[in-house]
Length: 158
Image (cartoon, rainbow, N blue to C red; front, side):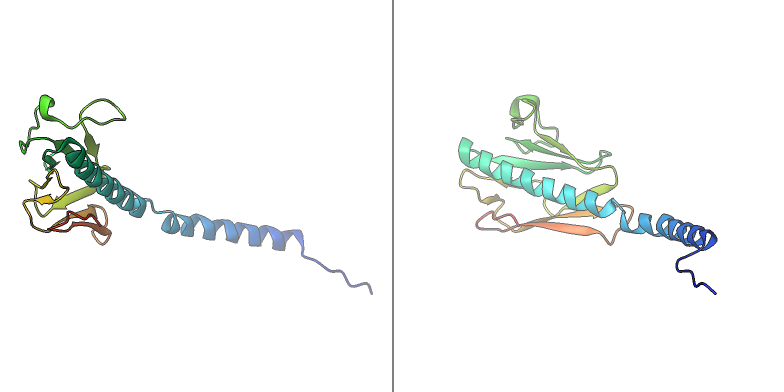
């Protein structure tokens, strides 16, 4: 009697079908984009704060970071005055668009500033001279948070 090696066609079809079902169920758990939205917006916020600080140093005047938490999606504006409405004549210009500097957060992401009137002076120090932080949270999954901190005396952003 001759021995054959290998698998039957039925065995192969069953294994491929089961593998497909496992992949279809497991993939959404690994490919969840919420953490990427939250991390990305925290990075953009950190960059926006650094841009505000560098603009204050370059212009030798105060630049304020204004967070509009009532808007959906939330926005972060840079302005030369601490007015929440930020008149167009006082807005910091975005070099990419030549318009007012406005960062719009992702739809599911919110930011909670400890000081909504945070600014930077011409030396790059935080105004008022107190530590501040911005907590970036994903509204779908509140466990996904990132914190951007600003140190008091130096204005160092981390």
